[in-house]
Length: 158
Figure (spheres, rainbow, N blue to C red):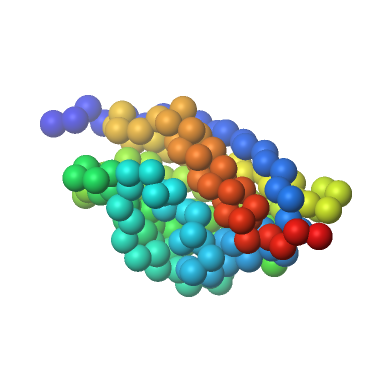
């Protein structure tokens, strides 16, 4: 049996994107748009269908795995949405059937020049030693970098 434990931690990541807040917000707001950047970036990951009901009280779910590896499942509920400004999500992560964390994540968007400053803050409870704040922060940085690459590809040049 695994020894039971919980570690609480918070991290914040900031990114500047060369796209207006409405465009950055839209990348989070539909399954089609979010699937282009969210669950892996094609680098050795197999991703299932992203299910997304983007509204307060709505849910999001996706499972991905490294080829032949353990399933990583993300289950989220939207707690607050202010179009173009803020998204608050409560989510848990599973490795196969084992819950490894429960988190509250906030995405804030602010205009910065012709672009957007995104501030992502996560408050996590990491369970039973299966996950930790350092690996979650690194994984989130990878996702936000993927979002940036997607925005660069899809934002028209002026």
